[in-house]
Length: 245
Image (cartoon, rainbow, N blue to C red; front, side):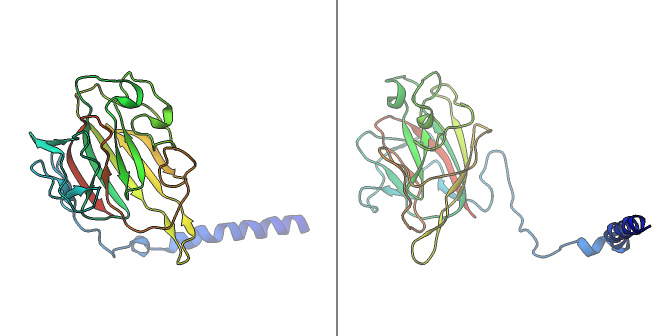
């Protein structure tokens, strides 16, 4: 009898939430505010709320990284711009924290070199964290240094690289690291990368800024520019836009 009464009591308790839900009205779980703002999209254009970092005509939104103020000296032609060897990295005039970034790039049609010497450039988030640009089509190099790697840190899930001379796309979702008032790391940087429509970095966590030699280590910082690397190869870029989040 005692066992039976306990079972019955448990049954009653278990059915109470279900009974309460049956008495609820649909509108009691509807949330109307805030209302998401409208953003218009088109296959050939950036979202209506995006900032155009390159519109196909000039590098007005970019400066030389050497001093942060001189004009960017890469060449602009036919709706794209191309790295000029020896002119140095370029960076955006604006600084950003969290964002969605769209970049289209193309490695040179003429194949010169191999490994890291072939179609090499890079896109640096906040000026510190590199998403590698490389001709990785039939071009073996270390896996954490190939196209779409988080350089020297995270290997892409797959190699989605197109042949040299074909335009490629990176869609990058960037979440900046957070630091407290004392400069202590609270949360690491995270990034998702879609390469030519293929997910290759799935919300991965970074160990710190990109290092060519040594182990990454965080140091407190704020917003930073987007930097494009002059690695000596004539890599081209076009249709670059960003949506701060």
